[in-house]
Length: 580
Picture 1: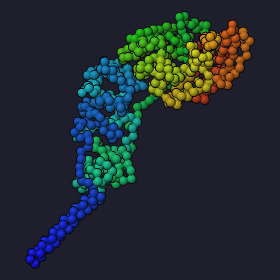
Picture 2 (picture 1 turned 90 degrees about the horizontal axis):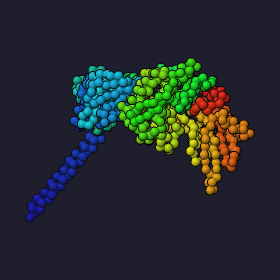
Picture 3 (picture 1 turned 90 degrees about the vertical axis):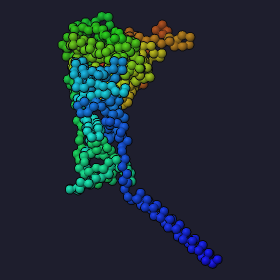
């Protein structure tokens, strides 16, 4: 019995010792794991996310893009969505004709899918490789992108990676540093995150070339030539030179060069049924550009009607004035919509206008599109992008008229003033019709505070350079007639020129009163129980507008229109040439 109890207790002691040893072993394992996880580096290797997903992955600024490239070396092609995202968001693809339109300040390029013949500035050009469609994605040849946009490409033969660099981009180069005579086996881990406990995407030898994307005190975010991207410890990176990808030269066109140090003083010549006779126009001191309203859009195919007069051009040139022919859309939204809808229709308009410019020896084209559906705004901007390089070849100044910003769908909302300001030589702000012909209330055609606010809003919100903006001022006013009927005031208006307004003042023996609120002289009189009100456009208001143009350092003044002006108007507007 005694021996049995002894054996029992010995067994229990052995069992307790075994549990202690097991517990100790577990503690050792846990401790080892904690030590290794806290102090020993991770040696796990992983593939980058793009491995196996793309045959030819595309990288920009170190980031993997969503598409693969096609071809290699000279035949390399990039997908259109990537080109639009990274290089030029304004590249246009027209699905119906399977065509691509690329525009730069100097070149208009028209491509068709699977065709090696392109058009550059409307002249045929043979491509080394044609655009190609694959799985619903269009691919464009890289050699063309290099020529147009100055992009640079590094293609890695081993990994298939395509590294894309854009013009103007700065590339910080470097290499993996190490001992002067490193062992062949020496490599440093490139990790997925800046932490020694994170997995490794590649082991890199000293001397390996890389691009530095970002850096901190202890880790550098880098990309290798084969596309692999990750983090190297700072002590293993040697910073090299910073290389700037050359920008595409942006030179002023020869036509715009003439205006680089001059201020524009333009007046519009309104041409209706009967063309003005130059002999009857008289002197316009200070005016250096005339813009006759000669050209109009007449159908949805983009055809243009002309009322141009070569004798008028010769008269203007003989007095040292340039002629910028005005082309309008006949203010017909449906005709405009059709004419802007396709490349072919837009080119019909552009080529006809260029032929007229050549035929009549014009110096510029002034575009005046009004009453346009908001949905057609992008097509109008595209029209201007396509016009610009061709007009530049012809030596023409290109300008477009825009209204002040408002909520009006047909008269304001369709205008992308920021993009247009980047495209054209001049953006002409039609700073009038604050109160328009059919306005329900009487008021100034262009009060000074409203005019200043209209200009500043575009300069500030749309970032249009001041030297590119021309402020268009009115040479007319309106006689507002107010009649009370059934307790309500009915308003009618009639536009009159400066001389006619002065004649009314003299005949009615009226005394103008200056209104601080609008910055203009004001008169009113009653006739046959009708109250007539006039916010005058005269030397006082024009002088204020000239001073505003100077203070904003704008590119000049335009005036609507020549026939409304008094002789004194030209003397006042002449002062704008002192703005620079």
